Length: 537
Image (cartoon, rainbow, N blue to C red; front, top):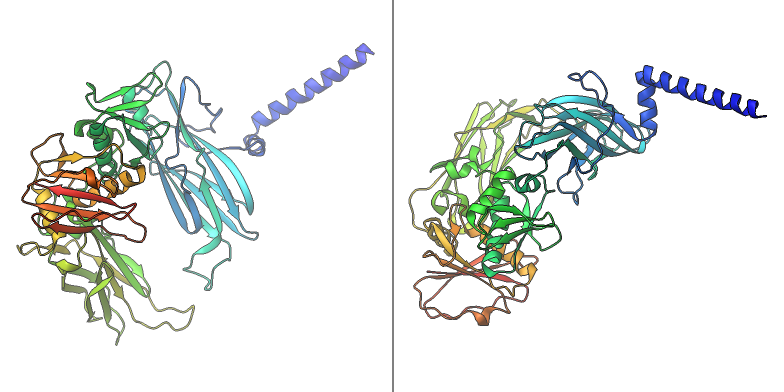
């Protein structure tokens, strides 16, 4: 009996060894088995083989998770694309790095599609999207070049057909498919024997970065300023005192330190916040290097030539505080390069400022350029503004699916906003111009403010304060005091020449209201739940 059991055990072991050898020697079979257990390994020509073993987070392996885990990120419909930026810790010798990409896909029955995976601009893989719901993990080895920058950029692009939401056979978007980059997606960085310092911990903290003052009015004021300053530099951040928040500490001797629990503490100063911005990849917007006239290119306008049918739209966004000198423009000199339209059709042009129509005209359809001087009334400009330029090709279609030939248009860099030298005509511009000439401001934030009021006040501050105007405790510049309905009585009357009140933060009120206060005028009480900024000098 014992002999029989030994023979059976030997047969089982022999079978298992043969099966393992077969799987290892057959890459396609190995991929199929890996897919069954949830892993799929991306093609990597540089390394010549599939990734052998996924790294596991631990004492030696640092995971860098997908930014904004509370947001859905991915491909929705065909064609579509999505990009995610994984930050890398500075000056940390990474022994080995992997991208572990977790994808959740859903596609209707009868659809077919594929997904391309790009890492730092290089196509590394193409995978098939199968009908139904599926979760898969793709693992890619990262080269030394991939790990040499400030971040690893991952882009997905999807293509295919689902025959959902489509009327015409071509030039339409297919619905019925969605591929999410799961929040579990991460870079896995093997640091060897090295350990992250404060710089590395801060650089790899999951976005957005939450800020909190460390129990001091000065630190609270700096946190409120930083919460609007960092996002304007391209660093997602906000005010919230929660576990894992970055704490600002007044009087700290170092710009950046780690506490005993591994938390990050930052010196409550503009220098400390600038250190945070650099580590998180922030940069001053190009608009701050501009002079009058201001080109549309520095406003982030799309200046590429685009073929289209029907209409083409360009959007220019700006806030007064970001423009040179805090000055509101008087006009937009618009320049468009256009293709020729078949007779007798002419171009139609519309320009709106904050939703109000400020220009409408036609242009010769046989010309190759459209130039217009568009007035920008100062009284229609708010603290934050949007200009929309719409160019319409009225050429009629021959049927619902038989459109005419594509038209083409390009917004030229010669499109510029001008200022003719006039004085400010409204309190909004007068306030921003005054703050733009100041190097520093004194920011006063009561410690009794509710968190929602603090967040609203930070947003208001971001609408009126230029990035180069810094807070300084007890500075000689304008004094900005944060108020709400409960702290209004705590503000003493001051005999100052100039006073402005900025209010906002209530639901249904998209913009801030700016009011210049007369000498001796009592402060209007903010509504319950509304934040206010009192600016005095």
